Image 1 (cartoon, helix red, strand yellow):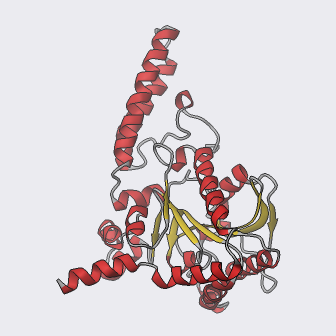
Image 2 (cartoon, helix red, strand yellow):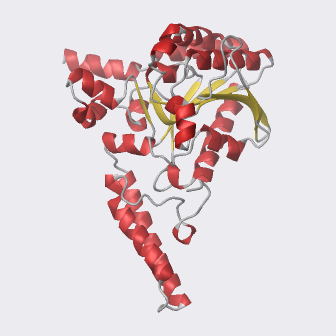
Image 3 (tube, one colour):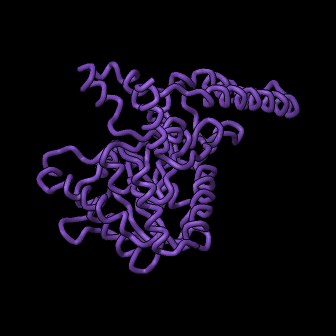
Length: 341
């Protein structure tokens, strides 16, 4: 389905058709709305009244369901096939986007998107992870898992932005770096380590947002920031729930238990001091309304840049250093209190 196609009555972009178990009630209401539009025995006034009632019921149900998603349910939403990707956000926010390619060493990794453009009147460098929409795109992008040349590409473009004093916006959406032999042979760990070493030194504002899934070192490779946010139903973790379950329980069938233990939801991570802000999503999730999600991202970016652009360079770097040093401190304090009580 095209990302801009509107479903029943123009409310919500996508019908999930029961794909996500927790949304079965919504699927029933969506089916009723489709059935209503096909009926010929209702007058226009009757249809309008019934449509309004169904919409109100849908909104009430969606708000109730999405206000209390369990960790494993949040994983499904973060990975939804119609969730907005980095190119969707670029399309909505940066019509003049000038994409840059290549790492000057090996090649161009399509799973990392970089380029200059304007958000409102602010020039920015975008560095984002691209999972791909169609099957062919996903295969070409390794499902969002970057090779070492992708991380070298990201760092090179960040350094170019820093040279011209341009803020850097990184959009995180990956299950992790590419785990294949060729990535190891070309030094993926070293490439990520180089990014972690160099990004804290860049003398321009750094803003990172987890737009879908932030997994392991693959996410950290572009995720050092002065301001870190997550969309409400995204996830951010040191390992995927399936990977964690395979290690601890020797079976991926315990992924739901691993998801709970990992504390990978936005509301968990802001309590732990890992992120700075949780970005609200449209009713029913960002996959239902890309434009609204993009508008939320723009507001966060512009608000953050208003503060960060006013800081002297030395203060910016010092505050970044202190942020990295104290990341997760609230979780550490809570852990100490629990185990010394």
